[in-house]
Length: 216
Length: 110
Image (cartoon, rainbow over all chains, first blue to last red; front, side, top):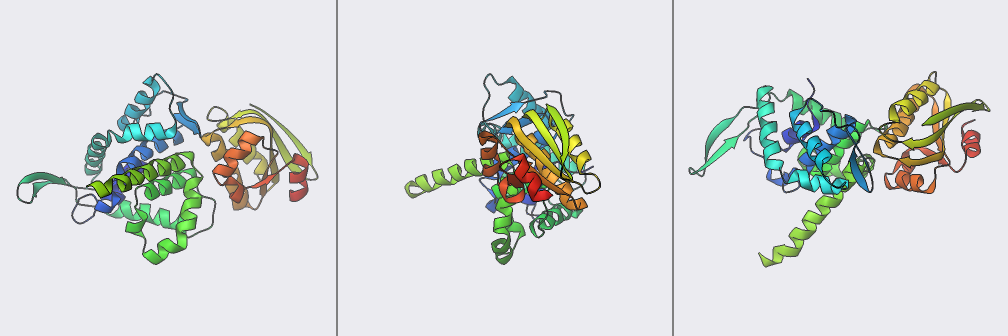
């Protein structure tokens, strides 16, 4: 069964050996996960967007508990918001989404759960990789889109926007490769409104960090 | 959504009318991909389309992708200002041929 975008993004954010999340994927990784949930709902025909709003077009459950939880939340909202509002709202629950996604990837035999202690004191749960086939396939798909000139599939555009949002390209491409394909990344990602809203939301995070960093 | 078809100088023109969004995307997609069969030259005339959502944009992209894959041609004609703006924000104008009128699109593809 193919992985969903939130699962793919989480796999890419994980340091395969240690089973810990890549520090470089933070802090925008939460937004990328939220974006992945919305992207799946959009491609499943449950929500649609335009530059001003994100709206439910079909509240019928998808059968994926994680997606359906977000869909129900959006459907129940008293007022429509734009994509950025929903990215930020869902990202507030990123811990819960992440835990559920980790459990799923364990159930699929891709990761294993290891309970341990960090600095001998703090309880820590890690998810080292058992099977790297899925992650290799995702990376190959991404490379295929970036290093060719074809018109991308919507799913691939979405995924590339999520990787851009999560700062993941610096983890999967060399500096030279990144220089070469940065224009293509932006072109492919910006085709999707969700990706542009995601980029806006993340720019705001980094602007806030820059604003408050001198005070820390 | 209403879609009417005509042929001009060997180019098939699909004139779309109404909203192009999740609700109408399957119909529009089926129609455009059907017209493209056999590597045809197809214009999507958007003069009467007043709203295009993200799902609607994906239909246009799929048609352009299909045209490229099978050796056909695909162009968009006469988008209204708000629709044109969405096409430009998303960079579709860099990937798709967009013409000011159906006649201009037909002339470009014929």
